[in-house]
Length: 263
Image (cartoon, rainbow, N blue to C red; front, side):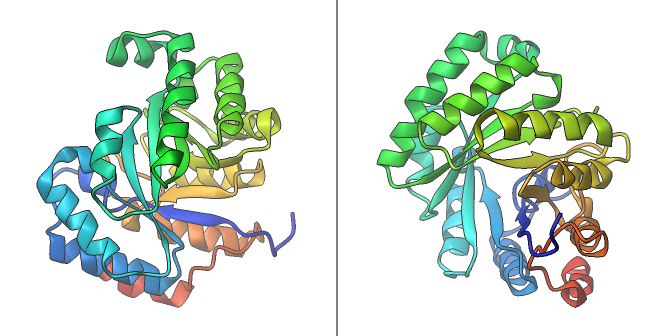
């Protein structure tokens, strides 16, 4: 694997990181964190969830108003209501998310695989028509049927999504299973793949690096590994791991990470 391969780090501290117990950022803190991430060389920030309401939209708009040299992305469920909320935020990209496993499709949405695919076919073009670049987020991909994941990747690519996120939502993967999951998704459609790991088994960083080795060009991270339950893959660990292991170039200035973590 060449050291010149670009690996994009999508920092979700302002979205998933805020799901850590006791963590709630003010708008001013979100603006400061976003500016520090951009200064450190992170090239994508998942800045929030518009459907959470007016305060969240105000914070997202404040970050968007900085005109930082990064891609700003809003996280949305794959619904018209969430997309409508995102339209008010001033961000260029959305992550339209939907469960991938049969368990979550049934328990969360009361639907099956065919309806999930139909929603992707309907909502991605709708978001594109609204002027967004669109990623498809695959919740609970680590428990999904491989054949369904292949169809999701093919469908997302066919309707114009630029990326598929594979989320280990409940933190059950190891590096070997991660590599299989990512490798299969990359082979299925040629669509860019992002890996989103959780640290329940202490493997979020290892899994993220395994995902890169398997072909993922995008990795979801948070500062200091903040996140739901045990947390997410730590930006600092993943950035250093990519550089130290010769997996590619992330664009992150490693000396800036200490100051960023101290914020």
